[in-house]
Image (cartoon, rainbow, N blue to C red; front, side):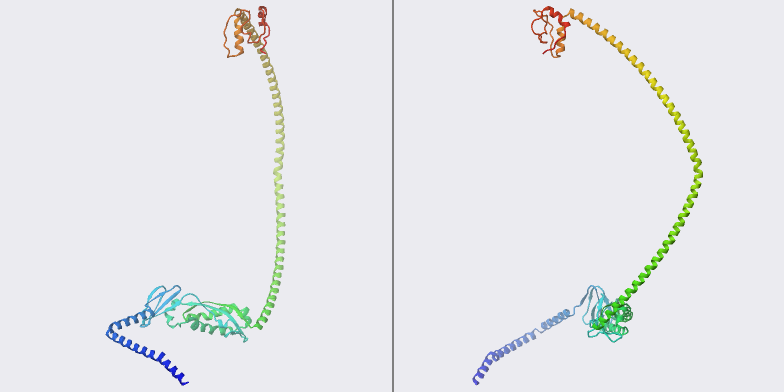
Length: 425
C-alpha cells in the first residue's frame, strides 16, 4: 500500500509540480523582462494605455445619437439641468455631461393580463363580491408639448411604473360599484365612458395623452355564466315578444290610417270627378249653342257646293262630248285627205314607173348588152362586168352564170325578157 502511495506522489511530482515550477519561473522571467522594457519605454506605454481607454469610452458612450422614425430624443444637460427635445436628425452627446433618453411617440397599449380572466391572479370584484375578468385595453401616448418638462420624472418603463398604477387605481373601485349583470350587458358603454372620464385627468397630470379605453370580453364564473346566459336569453325572448307586439300594433294603426286616407282620397276624387262632369256638361251646352248654327251653315254650304259640282260636271260632260265630236270630224277629214294624197301619190308613182319602163325598154332595144350588164351587177358587187358582143351561137354572155342548160334558138332568146327569170339551182 505504501509503495503505491509513493509511486503516486512521485508521478504527481514529475507530472505537475516540476512543470508548474518551470512555468512559474518562466512567467517570472517574462514579467521581469516586460517590466524592464515598460520602464524603459514608460511614456509610450502610458500614451497607448490612454488611447485604449479613450477608444473604449467612445465605444461604450458614443458622442452622437440618431433619432429614428416614430421616436423623440430627449437630451438632459447634467451641468445646468436643461432639457432639449429632438424629433429628427443626429444629436451631439458629450459623455459625462449629457444624458439621452428615447421615447416612442406612437400609440401604446396597456392591457392588464392578470385581470383578464375570473380565475386569474388579480380579477376584478363586482358589487356582489364575485370575481370577474375583463379584457381591458388602454391606449395612450406621450404629450409632446410637455415632454421636455416631464421627462425628468418619467421612469424607465412607463407602462409598468406609470400607466399600470394609475389604471388599476381607477378600474378596481369603478367595477366594484356595478353588478355583474350591468358589467356584462347593460351598462358597458357607461362604464367605458366613466373610465375615460376618470383616467384622462390623471394621464394629463403625468404628461400622457389618453387615446381611448376599450372593454372586450367579460369573463364570468362558470356557474354564474350559465345562469346569466339563461336569464339573458329569456330577457331577449321577452324583449323580442314585446317588440313584435309593438310592431303589430304599429302595423294595425298604419293600416287604419292608410284606410282612412284612402277613403278620404276616394271621396275627394269622386267629388272632383262630379264637379268636372258638371263643368264639362255646362261647357258642352254652351258649345252646342255656338256649334248648331255653324252646323246649319255647313249643311247649306255643302248643298250649294253639291249643286255647283253637279252643274260643273254637266258642263264638263257636254264640253267633253262636243270635243269628241269635233275630234271625230277632224279625224274623218284627216283620213279623207290622207286617202286622197295616197291615191294621188300612187297615180304619180305609176305614171313615173310606166315612163321609166318605157324609157328602159327603148334603151334595151337599142342596146341589148345592157341586160347582161344589169344581170351581172345584181349578182354581186364584186363581179367585174365586161361588155362584149354576142357569141356566134346566138347566146348572151351571162347564160352560164344563170345556169341555162342546152342551146336556145334565136326565137327563144327574143322571148326571154317577157318570161319570168329562174334562179340558179
